[in-house]
Structure formats: structure tokens, C-alpha cells
Length: 615
Image (cartoon, rainbow, N blue to C red; front, side):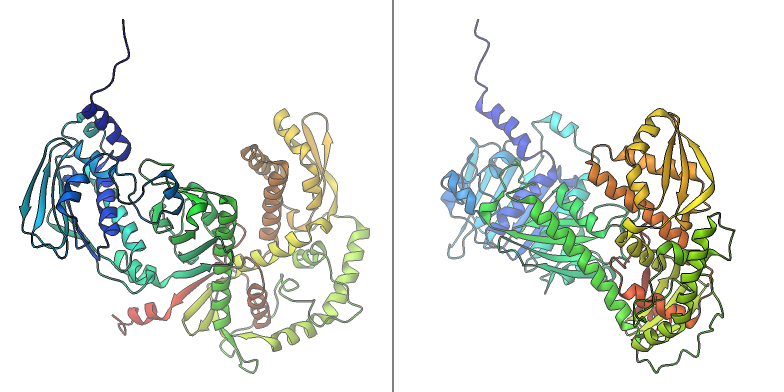
């Protein structure tokens, strides 16, 4: 008995429609894209019941002739392509002729359309592709399409729709994406007789962001522009380090003016912010990527929501570097605004007479005597921390360190004075013995002295970690681990040694901590090693080199945190100037190694607004 039969055409089209139209937002997307392809400059969208009862899209585009108004409802009827090879040079949205055919298979449609020079327009009522009613009608130039009772004949599809609030949010996000792409088009979105979005023609992308969200967000956006590669171009706006979000709802990517969802691009963007972002926080970004149509496939997804690049890694790397560079330039610009002439006196700054971390706030490489030898990080930290708990170390190393520190102290005062003469920042004071206040034209820049110093030290440690000096412990500490943890730790012992931590296997489950950098002298070693083992376990899928890189970062960040000046430490004028100068000349200066911002700008506008000088 024959088991294979051919589905009725109408049933097959209902099933096929599910690939293109599975929620109201997809219908809105297809109809608005058709309006944009028609050259519309005003597009008005109206929805009821989150698009289930009604979706109406009215545009002032070129409209259609009576023949085309009927033809457009047929499956695979299109004016965009004539053969498969045309896809490689496509510059429009719709091209497969599936939109209206799919929509009419699961709803009822009424369309009014008119071309500019036609006396009358055309009205088409469609309840299926085979039941079209055509008549003449009076209407404006453009197209007016109403989709009623979506999924009335496919109850299983309607059953799986989400709550009205969720479906409405998807439509709002879609309209935001269209508005961000086409700033010259006036978009409106109405729901239940309420105007949700009204975005008139905008002069630029920043103005459009202000229309969609608020002016404050637009003021905190940085312009990015990458046109070094002839094969692609990256432009757009990204939020500075002062603006973060709890979700990814304000991250938009556009490829050749098409809104796409691409996880790899999103990850590249977020990596560019690392380590600025704290866990669970995300930036705002509106990124446009222009690629040669031959180098991108926009036909890999039924709803054209995803694309495939010919060289994705090149684009992702360029985006990551571009974001990081712009963030660094922004912080540098803010610090630069606070620089004044050397003769300016900081009369309002109370100078602390002493500080335990003073050897670090300096640039001993500036104008050093030829006989001066730059101390290692451990040697400098010895003097930094000698006033704290006693350090267990060998007498030979202690004497050697003290001799070099004496030399260091002889030239310290001269080096500090000469460095201050080069650049001086307009410091207003220090709030809560933690936040350095720097005056500048745009407002007051607040610098977290611990986070800033931590970043400075981390960059120094990371550049010379291969020569990290350590001190021998008189009483090695024994750390007991599980067999799995022990095996994993032993395999990465060279990484610890590079950072001045000397471990020695002891039995089959224990390790001895024989030597350590001075910055880690008082830590709880069992907890410290457990944290690093967890890091290695989480990154098992990465290559050995990648795990090593992450482990180096974790160790150096911990060392920098231990050695940095703390919140509450009193700093002298010279030390504050040194800290600001070193931050100004340090890479990745916009955050500490753990992701906290090193500085925060309090805009002058916000200050004046608080005092009712601005509205």
C-alpha cells in the first residue's frame, strides 16, 4: 500500500509560512522591509492585541500597479532577483517573494496601493492566495496593508505565542532597529490607540538614539570608525565606561543596513570592554558594518535574521580592538582636560607628610642618573610594606633590597619634582580619602585612587612578569588538595613560577609554597590556590596557552590589588600628581583588572541642573 502522498498546496504553504512568520514581529518586519524597499520616507505601524488582531503598515513609497498588486501574493513572486547569482550583489531586504505569500496563508489581508501617476489606486482583499478580490479604490500614493486575525487557521502556532507584553516588546525592538538604520525615515508605532514610538527624520545616529531612549544616553556615546580594511568598514556608537545595562537590549548590529543577530560579534564587542564590565552588566552599542555583498551570505536564515561572513575573525578582531582603543582615548581625553600649567599652585590640597606606598607613585625612569638601577617590583614593594606586618625572608635578600632602596630614595625627591614640572593636573581635592577630584572643562573627573593604582601596577607586573623576584619563606606553607586539583595545579606550576610563586609537590595530594612575591606574603594560600584551580577548571575547553594567559592575568591582578594604595590612605600632592600622570600614560586605563572603573566624570550639565541653572 502506498504510504507517501503529496500534501495539499494550501496545507504545505501553512507549514512553510511557519519558517518565515512565527510571531507578529515577523509580519511587521516583512511589511516594513517592503515599505523601505519601496523608497518610503514615512512609515506608520499600528498594532492591536500585540499584533494578533491587527497589524497595519502605511507607507508613502512608490506603490504598485494593479497587476503587481495581485502578483505580489503569489509564492516566490519578486522584483528583486531573477536567478541565484543575483544574491551575491543584493542590496534590498525582500528578495525571495515569500513574505506576503506566507502572511496570507495564515491571516486575512487588505491592501490599498497606488502609484504616483495613477488616477486611482488598487484594493486587494486576500483570505488565501486563491481567493483574491481586486477592485479600484481611492487612496494616497504608497501602500496601506492591514493583516487581521493572525494565525486564525493555525491554532497550534497561536498557542505558542508569548504574552502580549513580550510580543509587543519584540515589535518595539524591531522598530527601534529600523529607526537606527534609516535615520532619514519618519517611523511611528501605535498600539491600542497609544503612540509608542515617534521618530521623525534625524540628522545623525546620535540624534536618533536620543529620540528612541534619552538625551543622557546619547551624550555618553563614543563614535567609532574603522575603515582601514578595504573589504569592510565599521562605524557607529558605543557607550563609554560610565554607561552599562543589565541586559543586551541596547546592543544592535547592522550588516549592510540589515539588523542581524550575531553572537560572535556581540562577544567581540564585550571583549573590547573587558575588564571594564562587571559581571552581569552590558554596554549600549549601535554598530554598522559595511561588507562587500560577495563576502556575506544573508540567505542562511529563513527570516534573514542572521548572516555568515567570509572572514568573520578579521571583523571580530577589528571590532574588539576598535572598542578598546576608543575607551582608552576617552579616558585619556578626560584626564587631559585636567592638566594645567606647572606654575599653578594646589593651595587647596592638604599634603600628607608621609605615605606607606610613596615609592610606587613615581616614575623613576624619568631623568634617572646613569648609575641608578631600577628596583624590581618585589624590591619596591618591600619598602612599601615594611611598616606593616613583618616579612619572613632570607637575610641576604633583605640586605640586598635595602641597599638598592637607599639608592632609590636618594634620587626619589629629584625625580618627583622633575616629573611634576612636566605635567600638572588641576586637582580640587580628595573626597573620603579615596576619590581624587580633577577639574576640567566638561565637569569634575573623579579618580578612584585604589582602582587607578591597581591598574598601573598590573600593567607593570604584566610587562615584566618573567623576571618577577620572590622571597623565600622560612616556614613553607603546606596546602592539601584533591587528587584532581593536585594534578591540574602541578601541570601549571611554571605559570606560578613566572609570577614569583614557587610551589613544590609534596606527596600525591599536597604542595609546598616555598617562595612568594612580597605582595602575596599574608594571603590565605589554600583559598588562593583553590580560586586559581577553579579558573583552570572553567577553562578546560581552552588551549593550554589560553589557560596560561588567563591564569597570568588572575595572579598579576591579585598582586596588583595587594600592593596598590588602599581607599582611605592619605596621599601628598606629589603622590596624587604622580598617580594621575601614571594613569594618564598607562594602557587599559579605563578600569582596574577586576573591571571597576578607574574614573568617573560628573558632567557640568548635571551639576548645573542640580542647582536649577539648567532644565
